[in-house]
Amino acid sequence: MLSALLQAGEPATELPGGYGAALLQTLLALAVVCVLAWVVLKWASRRGFAFGAGGRRVKVLERVALDPRRTLYLVEVGGKVLLLGAGDGASPRLISELDPDALPDEPAKPKARFADVLGRLRGEGESDDERPAPGEP
Image (cartoon, rainbow, N blue to C red; front, side, top):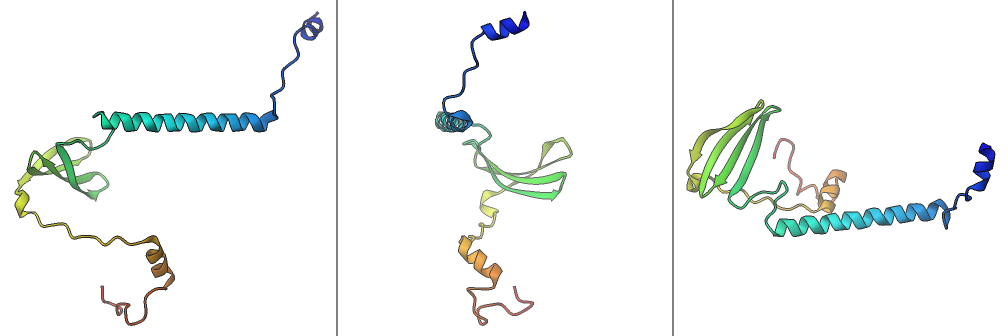
């Protein structure tokens, strides 16, 4: 009886193109979903919905990890610069309010190109007279 029911049913339909076509269709659907998510997040960030991004009024100027559990934050809020300490699951605590004009300017970091860094690692690109002597920074 069971074999009669199995034979009476419609035959299983084959995929038109096999597993390669199914894989291609799946990858295409994944790409469409990723692009759609990117567009929605861009639109939401322009409308003011921040997802983990910095706000307009609070700006973290610098973060220094003292050890794996304690961190110092230099935060600018409404023209004031605050030094905050956080760690060990405790709430951040105000350590000091600093004068924004008394803070030293950040030194400008020269942007190194990847090719320059790779050349320095290989020992290329610098002549002997350009290289610092041992013990010099």
